[in-house]
Amino acid sequence: MDMAQYISASFMGQNHYFNAWARADETSIDMTLFSELGAAMGDLSYTDGIINFSSRVFPASLQPEYIVADFQLCFYDPVLLRRALEDCGLSLEIQLNTRRILEGRNLIIEIEKSPNRVRLVNHLRGYTYTIEGDFR
Image (cartoon, rainbow, N blue to C red; front, side):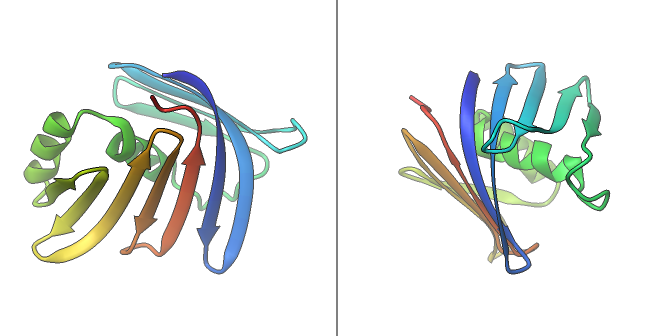
């Protein structure tokens, strides 16, 4: 993946809108986040299990591990995801264009994918975001 994305996020009753340039392959994830006017908002990289995140805009309480995990849940190979989730005591269900991550019978995360949009709802942590781009 090497593409521009538009992201809208909702957390604790607040909505946030920003853009990202995301580059990802089998070994790494790199994201540059910027405002709708093009102002730099932050950079995230994940390589060899190490996450680097810097931002003057996002609060220090933002945990970049969640960003990386959500990205992997949305875009990574479902066979590999299923194995990794099972190692954590979770399960992955896939029906058509929807991925569901469950703990037992409790739905934790639901991801709906289309060629131009990915919507993730984290029921456990109470946030939602939509990523728009060309995912074909």
